[in-house]
Each structure stands twice: as C-alpha cells, then as structure tokens.
Length: 88
Image 1 (tube, rainbow, N blue to C red):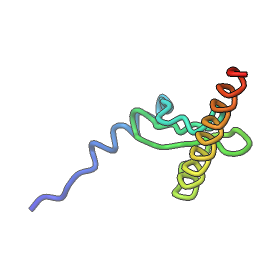
Image 2: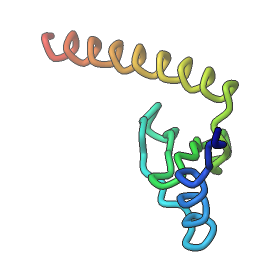
Image 3: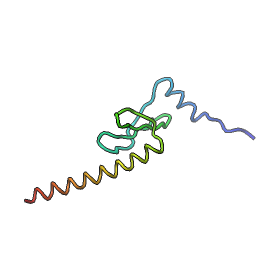
Image 4: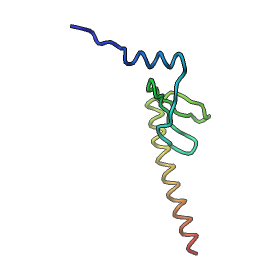
C-alpha cells in the first residue's frame, strides 16, 4: 500500500517561492474590490478596506458577496434614474 504524495501541490508552491505569485483577477466585486487567484498555487486574495491584498477567508468571502449585491443594486437604480431623466 503506497502513500499519496504531495508532488502536484509541492511544485507550484516551490515555483511561487522562487519566482513569486502570478495573480489573476477572478472576480470583480466592485470597481475597487476584486478577488485574485494565483495561477500556479491557487492561493486566493482580496482587497481590504485600505486597498491592501489580504488572504481570502470565509469572512471576507461573505463580505464580498454582500458588497457585490449592494453594488449591483445601486448600479441598477442609477440606470433607472438616467433612463427616467432622459425621457423628460
């Protein structure tokens, strides 16, 4: 009976340790808040209230979901206002 090895996860982590992470935007929550994922080791980050990158924890995932809902509802309301004002 053989033990499973961690080679698939070890190599990307080693790459990131040597050359640094390669973050890509995976989700745009608002204009200023985004979620990022490293393309090699799959580490997830988000921006906090100060604009710094921090690790994406379940607490920040929940905050981002709420922020996105508020942002989309405001954008919908502003679109309706511009349409109504252009009619008059």
